[in-house]
Length: 218
Image (cartoon, rainbow, N blue to C red; front, side, top):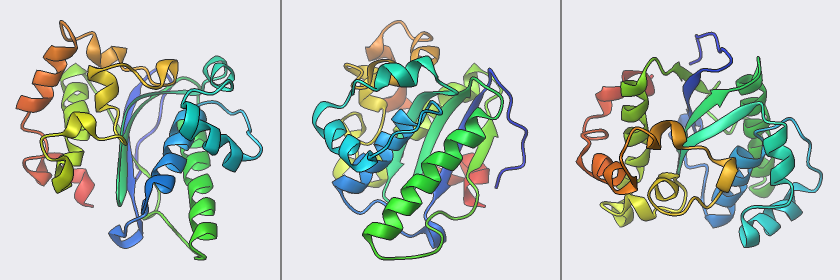
């Protein structure tokens, strides 16, 4: 999937799906595990006993280790959505090689967790992650809408995308659950207020036609 050079200071749309498009997030525990990884692996810090940390994360969300992560960031997480068989992120690279390190750690950690939990072996994700350079604000806003409207594919969440717990949409339009672990300002500052952003998402045509993002079908 990945054929571009990653550069510090730039934003990218990152994505991947389960091998053969299979479901890779089966329950709340799986979603929480992956959510912890994309939030807390933004630095190169190593955390022993991740299972215990995830239990604390489920209860408290923002842990004491967040301060260390923020100080030592190699990437910034701006937008995310975790779906049953795939995920989308918008990430800013802060340090050369930051995205590569971040994604390798996230995907490897989740694959190890998944294979252990479900007594499987082999690949969990369908090859390398995809990375697309975001060229301008127009593309950035479109992708934020595309990602935040993803949950409409699940009938339970259709027209309730702002309540989907595994997306950053609610953090854009309500209180940010993750504080400085999620930095949506680059997008929100282009709107007068949060209600204007909500209106933008509701009226967006993103996710009406899958071919809008050609590269996702490859």
